[in-house]
Image (cartoon, rainbow, N blue to C red; front, side, top):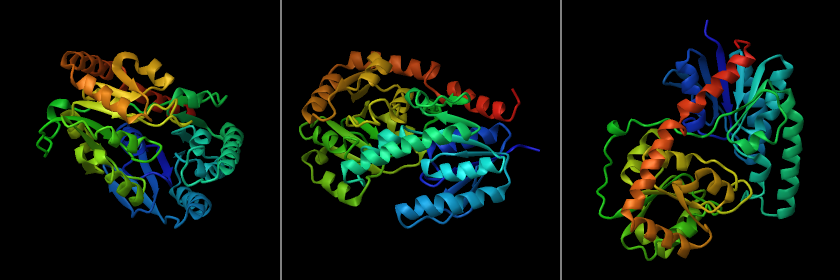
Length: 369
């Protein structure tokens, strides 16, 4: 009988790239019986993964205290799985309860949660942000030793915990078959820079759009959702919006059609605590399609990506515009950077190279190693 595994999230969508397409599908293809509990969904099956929906809380407190604990825990227990793998800080109490009942539990930590709270827009008062950040830091530190293992998305998160069974599973992409990517139903008339991901104040969306005010020969392709309708309307009022092509949100498997047809990839997050050492998926997806990069000038990014990218002050729209103009105007340098990035992606920065850590984690807690 295959080992029954249950992934749980009350924050992410059912088609989350890391949770569903990488982890759940990889485990399913390796012979595990995989379920995924998600808030606000109907029960259904996708690619052999059984998705179970639970009622979504109408407010953040109800999501944290009712959906994450009572509903997610109750559904998880009813599935009678051997391994429970959860992805959100608010699920820690449910994870601890499952451990008390003797279950094997993995905590998958996608970001530096205490640092992330310091720049959450819904926490208006700095004092409360700092207090909540410290509380989450202590809560994680106390809770993590009780779990069977932890998985982290980047090295700086791993360094926060002195846990024997911890595994690094970075946000490297599943490499696309570039020769068989569907054609993009869009007729390009000029060079394009692409940004894929959520759009918000702290991700530098306004500064990036403003950089295109005077870039008449280059357009900005945006793929993803805005964090609010009000912020979307604010961005659309910017002078640079005239050179923006907004494609909206697309399914993860469709993204590469857009990236492959762009000329350079861009990610200009603002220098907020959780951004300074993040390894976002975006640059690796750009590299998989052989794009040159322009990124925020964070020291960690400069030391990691080196000459795979040019670097800019993300708070300076004019500097961003000049970097785009300079790189687009140097085709030979773009070609060299593209070739280097494609090679790095094929040899190192891909899901196949890191997915072995996922299987090592499961094999060790199931005592197969």
